Amino acid sequence: MRALSFTARQANGRTDGGGRVDADVIVVGAGPTGLMLACELRLAGVRPLVLERQPRRRDTPKAGGLGGRILELLRHRGLLERCEAACTGPVPAPRFPFGGVHLDLTRLDDPPLHALSLPQQRLEEVLDERAGELGVEIRRGHQVAGVVQDEESVSAQVLGPDGPYRVTACYLAGCDGARSRVRDGAGIAFPGTVYPEVNRLAQVTLPDSVTVLGNGDLDVAGHGTVRGGFTRTDRGLLGVGASPDSPVVSLFTTEDETAEYDDDIPMSLTEFQDSLRRVLGADLPVDEAVRLSRFTFKARHAEHYRKGRILLAGDAAHLFPATGVAINAGMLDAVNLAWKLAADVHGRSPDGLLDTYHDERHLAGERTMLHTRAQVALRRGTDPAAEALREVFQELLTDEQPQRRLGTLIAGSDIRYPMPGPFGHHPLAGAFVPDLTLHGDGGVTGVGELLHTARPVLLDLADREDLRRAAAGWHSRVDIHTAKTDDRPADALLVRPDAHIAWAAAVDESRDDAVPALREALTHWFGAPDNRA
Image 1 (cartoon, one colour):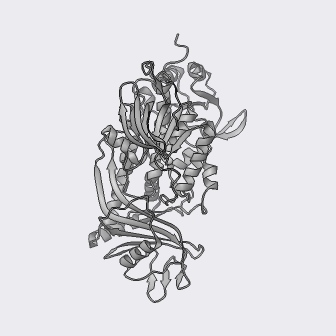
Image 2: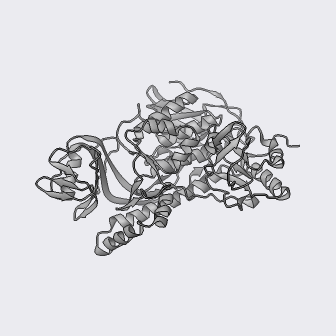
Image 3: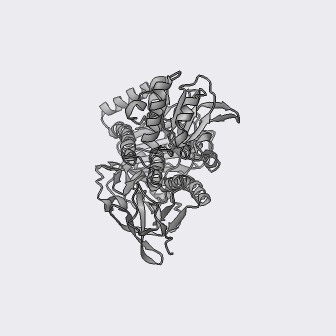
């Protein structure tokens, strides 16, 4: 397959020296992170080229759901309904494992953490379809063997079905997973810890010899009761998630092992039953498997998310030692990165904008690493002190405030990026935009609908003509909307494409304070105005 070729756009006033490039951005990896990044780049008017080593989308079960902040972001892009339609089961109740204990948010009217039963392969189908609609080129069966960069461009050596070739772009994003060739080729350190344990997860139907009791316990003929929730034995950890209202039961085992497993080779039902037998010390018969997956836990964090024209996102940048957070974090990396890359490719990037990708997302990665490492401490302790810690922790999680705090932490929705200068003082600055109901000439809408196109938005909530006039010089890059909302949190909000607030005007803030701060924020994030005079 021949590479497309077109003249490079200017990047921060530089070109590639009169040469030619094959894409604005090369995206290595067509998992959820890579596909999300490619879609976001295309929305921003940038032409990505996605290179994926696998010849077709993998059907090996990996992540079984999607949850946290990314669900809100997908709604803001108009993709949440598609994801919901692709779900393989009903929306699960807000109950989540945390280090061997349970976080039960079902008693909260507005739980801070939600999830979808969306297997990773179905999520990739949705994102692949969206990429096709946007005109993204995806080359499957094309493996990146090496990367080389200079001051003006970056090249990838590729092994394709028709032989080796080279592609060149302004930037290259490594979304190629835990064993990232891009990260290794760029020489980015990936320090951390590998935990000597193997986790196996199965969703199964049970034979008549096993009865699901009303409290979620299992009554196994010839053995007795297997308790619902988590049971720790001398040989490992057993998890049971069952309800008499559902024919499918979730079973989970953790064992200390040092064996290496190939992620491309799926786990068999026999392997899972052998693990059940070892951990439980008895046979727990199963009928059919709906889903089988195996995974290990590592806590690794790239020292840098950017090195020159090479950037990392998703598992290439971070590995967390707990379930339920990796896809959320990786796709949010992609959304944060895309609009900043696009600004540079279009020659509109303010100084230092692309460096904020590392600053912001590394901070978010550290926050996620904090609670997933805490889960390791809860999960792996085996002595009486560790049992006491889990029991006390579970007691604390019966109270609303700890439930909300932990749910927000897992969701990744407690992240507030530091905003520099005078536009960082408002309590909303750096936070994810609140879900406001807006009343305008076009009727009732929500903030999310204004972000479908992934463009920045100045949202005027107080009919401030002075602010709209101050932003007029950025009208080609920033959408300006005027609307009313109940109990407005600010007179105006400047919302970045990743739905984080870059600046906010306090209610009834004076023109002398608000107008200069808005202009400074617009310049800081989106470059000089069009009418520079």
